[in-house]
Image (cartoon, rainbow, N blue to C red; front, side):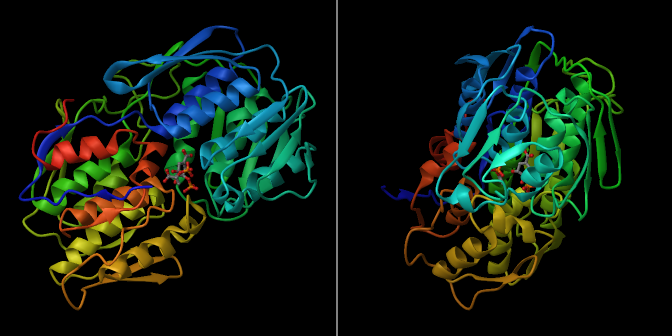
Length: 455
Ligand SMILES: O=C(O)C1=C[C@@H](OP(=O)(O)O)[C@@H](O)[C@H](O)C1
Ligand SMILES: C=C(OP(=O)(O)O)C(=O)O
């Protein structure tokens, strides 16, 4: 693997960029189309053309779902899905995708035969307990019976009785989302209670909203969510919006350099759009991604973030401030925010990132990885129990070795952000960005060198 030289910014980064569709929305839309109960062929358009999407499409195909992909607008994919009358047994490669390893086992329980699950070496260390505990609570048989990690087999028996389960979802909101997405197909529907606080709650909200858009009755109260048994009928042409966490990387480039970057194609929403209405049109969309929380986190470092007809725009300050931010709702932003905190520390400002203990179970132990890569350039980033503290360094930052990506897209993009102000920084595996941002290296270089990415 050849290291990639991250471009250094000569001045403020200005431009307009297009980012791929959200992998979280894409993979929910694909699964809901595959679980649809009316035999209609559906298209998910604007889907991320990325490894996680491909893994979901291939996983669904392994369960007997009819899938076809075609190039869509702006480098995205159009995926056509026809749900079969019955899912079948097979073998699913989860890669490193949390959405595949947590969302497909509850669907596999509906299959007519055993479904084997495995993934990348690191995927075998990612927590799975909540999903498997939930399935066992519904009398779904697993092999091994006490499995709590990949690899395992779900012994599908063509149906699931459904009912109420209590799980520990402190390690990932995806445990709750995964169970809820298949719940309407269980005989008695499904009620999921988490015995512990759930991180990344906006991702559970995304699940609830997308289920409602697909005609499912969902109730939620505190840490309990319930879906009624019944038809799943998503929009036959579902349009995926751009990925907010991917967008945040480009917005952060403006922040770090005192520039201005717009992410094009951000949907304009009417306030009060109603997810209970079984419809989807561009101007009648409920919020699916946590823009408010992301905006607050970026603004805490001094950015101005605005939405308009051109898209989502961040304007950087002359110098970043330090910040004390709780990222519990948006844990996947931690690498990006850490890069902002490292740059702020160069101006003498300390920062504290809290509420993200669970990201030790993400693509890698992100707290350990961020602290280690920061130390290798002379930055001062210390792990805490639930986050990171970033302090001013004792001298200028200098790479001593390539920044490690750890097969983690967001570690790679965090390295690119730090590279804007640290000359000579290389990233050991920029291809890791293919998990969600397949064109990242080229798009980033084009933006930073001033030409902007055609949006
Ligand atoms: O449901 C989803 O699409 C996601 C939920 C979150 O997972 P965690 O709750 O494990 O943080 C998020 O970090 C991940 O990137 C995507
Ligand atoms: C945590 C992430 O991914 P996954 O869906 O694999 O959990 C992420 O994208 O930051």
